[in-house]
Structure formats: structure tokens, C-alpha cells
Length: 361
Image (cartoon, rainbow, N blue to C red; front, side, top):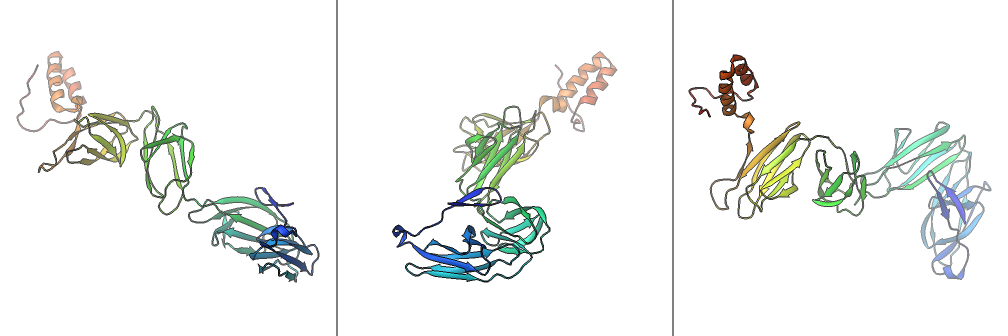
């Protein structure tokens, strides 16, 4: 057994030897070149030096011969049972190369942050020294690594990118938040999942004392799902009064609770609120959650088959109603003009125009 060092690990390479056990599944190959001691690669894995003899599985294989200060030589061979395969390579002088062989073909190759083209690709005139590379392809996980290029050397980078299909990653700051995928608790952050169906998914990340983060992630094209959120402390509260024990409440398609009263700490923003109950029309509207405090909505559910539509209306706090401040202001007048002015300045909503009758306590 010999070893080939790649950019990130040492890969063991098993060399086949002649044996009757392989008679029906392998064939023999011999490789020579005009440069003795040139490196021999089979399917981009180094297996020895010229002259080389060995056994290979039946079928098609890539053969690469390379030596410093010579241009690499490549070919394909078909290994057949009982038929020896001979390969003879003639190498010509060269100044050195960096070659990328990547699966899937067409992957984008970047070196030192600069795009170089699509693999397979052979680069010439690479500056001497250490370099960083990144390999990317749609619906595949990117791979990064490094190599050192010396004068006249031939560097081979061979990588197989892993498919992103079924992969999902969740993170939060701070960590330890509960993760719900399609309304099912799947773990806490940081969290990685595999074998997740490629589809449109609802993600909810929540933690006590922090605003819940809601996301919709579409992985139907086979891409990786990735949700990273910053949790906001002291969040505002969304309260929904349904008036029905069997009602269910959804925010942006996420099931957040059921019953006559449902509440959820949410980050500031605009959301689609929906209330459902058996035998009643759905109530739905866009709602705005403020920066802090609490916002309350009440559902007015209409039975199925009736002309009146179900609705959701915001519940105004008592202290936001002009009638409340009219009463407070009137009481403050008895205590002095200053108190009346203060009460009037605190009223958030102006009173209606015209004559209005206010009943004092």
C-alpha cells in the first residue's frame, strides 16, 4: 500500500497485484515513458512511477503521466480480461502546471479569490509559492484547500464535491435556540440535518426571552438549506384572541398555537396572520408587529356558508382611546390647569370633531 497526499488529507491507495482471485474482474497494465521515474496516476490517483505494472478493474480508466519540468501526458484505456494493456508516454519539456480535475465537471475553479474557469482545467504561469483555491458547483457543497507551486512542478488537485441535496444547517446567536422544521421540533442550534426532503420548508427558531425568527426556505432545486439568525432580546408580543377553543393560529404559514388566546414573541416586522376553525371561514390579514410592547388582534369568525366574511381587527389598548383621555383630562381640570395640559399632551389619538358626549364617572 502506498499513499497520496491531497490538499486536506492522506488517502490510502491499494495497488492491485496479480492473483487468480481477480482473474474475472481485472486486467493487467504496463506503463512506460521516456522519463524514467515519472509519476503514474490512474483515475487521478497516484499509483507509482514508470516503469509501472499492475492490475486494474475492467473498464475505462484515465492514465496520467507527470514529471517535474515536463508537460503532463494523459490518455484513456479500456481494460479487458486476459488482454494485457500497454501504455507508452512521451513527455516533452515544460515549465510546470496546476491542474484541477473536479466532479462534477464544469465546477468553477477560483485561485486566491480569482475565478480561473471551469474544471477540468490546466493552468500555466502560476506564480511560485502558496495558493488558496475554492471549488464550487450548483447544488453541491463548496470545497476549499491550498497547494504550493514550485518552479517546474506539476500540481494535480482532484476533488469530488458532495451533493447539497438533503442537507440543512441552522444557527443562531445566541446558540441553544429551538429549531422547528415544518412545525416539528428537530433540535437546538447549532444544528445540521441530512436527508431532508427537497421542498419548500417553514423554519421557526425560538428561545425564551428572544423574538421568534420565521423563515421560508426553498430547497426544491436540490440546494442546501441554510438558516442563520440573530435573536433579538426583549421582543414585542403578538397576541391573537380567537374566541374559539378549537381555533388554530398561523403566522406566515407557521403554526404558532391554538385555543382562544395565542401569543408569540416576534421580531419587529410585517407578517401574514391567519386564524382557522372547523365550521368557520378563514380569517386572514397582514399585521404589523411594532418595535416593542404588545399588539393584540381579535378574530371575528363567520360560519361557513354565510355572506359575512371572517375578519381580524386590532384591539386598541384602553390608554390609546381618546375617550379614556377625555375622562382623565376632565378629572385633571378639577385638580388644576396644569394637570389638564399634561393629560391632553399624553393622549395618543385626537378626539373626533363635532359635539361628543362623554359620561364622567
